[in-house]
Length: 538
Image 1 (tube, helix red, strand yellow):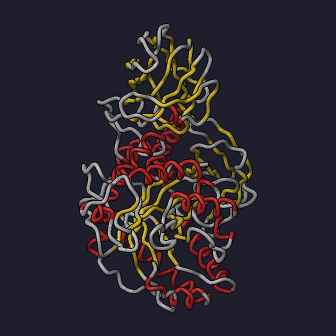
Image 2 (cartoon, rainbow, N blue to C red):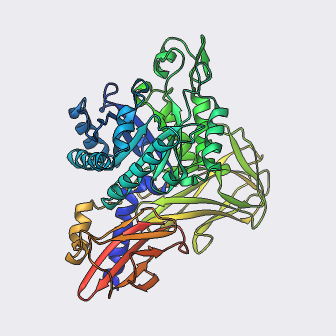
Image 3 (spheres, rainbow, N blue to C red):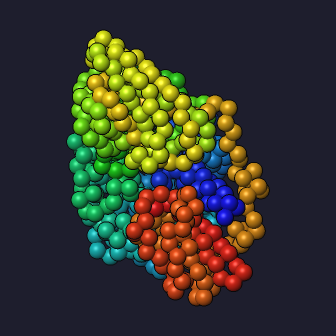
């Protein structure tokens, strides 16, 4: 049992690392073949990069890759930083979508296209494909789009790859709802609405409302933002360099998104979706420049606790007002450094919970609280998963005022994993501005190769044709075996702690997992002396 539990934990870590973007807030940047330097990309602030573009031929072929050396270099550097790279097919192309229209209408040409995409993805070691058909027409063209995306979905997901699509911000009726079920997520191009005010905050709201009201799941809704202005088509960096205010949205008749709007849109994307998409990365300033829009996005992401979890020695800061649930507290403006809001009116037994906080290694973490108390002080404690794991408490001193801030801390022992992190008032009478969690600085995270060589036996490597999809899954998990029957076998599913949560005879190639809670799971299939293990996210 210890050996099996080690495998479960191992693969959970690998999966959480390799598919972090699927489970957490996505930050997706397009990189054109004709612009941008792969050496200056802020990889640590991204989860995905879409390389743009290749174009389809009328018979399902692919026109040549304009800059193959750049794509190869991008994949290498991105993968070294845990960032996925997809190839984006299509683009505006001066409004010429004839290649899509013709090959998508023919079943043989569609198959040829899918096979060519598989070859391209394999050739460059890509993580999936992004379809940017601008735009299918209503009627037959819309149905052909569904047929294409369904076929691509099967082939990509069978190979553990992603399928995404870029769609118009509003009035995308030719993208039928059937597409929602086959893609991993949709990138909403909430820009180019018109010229001067082509990408306002209101248009972003309207775009997300349009797709969500049609039934697009929140976890598949990614908001697109521009790193350029209209009607001049200058990049954000060019506009600022010639005098535009980086925090404004207009300059000499040009409309763009400044830092304030970009942050507001990122918060909107957290509230109404599960990611933000950028067209395109070369329009931004490089790392270290205070006007970088990607850095502004990253700041919000860290505040909301959505991605880029702490690595050994590097802390994550959770803003108190960004709780996912609470009892008894209120927010107010703060005068503490950095401004924003703090949480106040905290009485005994009040609490806040912050979902999906990742602790990358097992060890002793330092937890700091930014607090203020007029006179009485108080006591704060923290816990994991609604109090099921208690971590300890620390006293809060009187600071002489509700906006006189100090920092208190304690050390806690945590087993690596992703948890809902709770802050609880053992005794009230204090305000909270933020919590900072610092992982152990000396901890060592084993490399994938080390973990595989140490803990994986040959049985895990067997059954290469055995695949499960979609991943992440919401309701029905499909099993593909390459034609081999599952009959006579047994399926068991284990949670991240190694507890068996499902057992069933393998009577069909589908398993209903809708009753499982969100988390990382291991599926084990046993038939005779054959044992195959696969992991998935719910």
